[in-house]
Length: 70
Ligand code: SF4
Ligand code: SF4
Figure 1: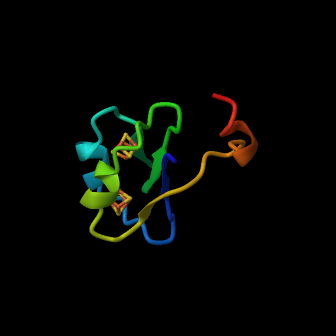
Figure 2 (figure 1 turned 90 degrees about the vertical axis):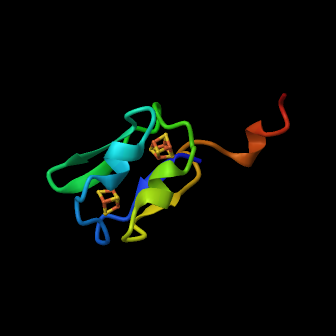
């Protein structure tokens, strides 16, 4: 579950950007955006966001159907 930014809560403070170990989250035009391909789901951004603007969500396209095919 990569990080997701709730845009209406984000103030563009860049705290998440500074803390992300992989550079997966960056502020663009005043709002943080996540590159899901780079996100390692470490939740550091969520912990560093004072606005509660970062949440963790299911990957688009990921479905329970694939979970049993290991
Ligand atoms: S969960 Fe971790 S890797 Fe993903 S955007 Fe947040 S800090 Fe970066
Ligand atoms: S730390 Fe939170 S408020 Fe600051 S830029 Fe990141 S998501 Fe937005």
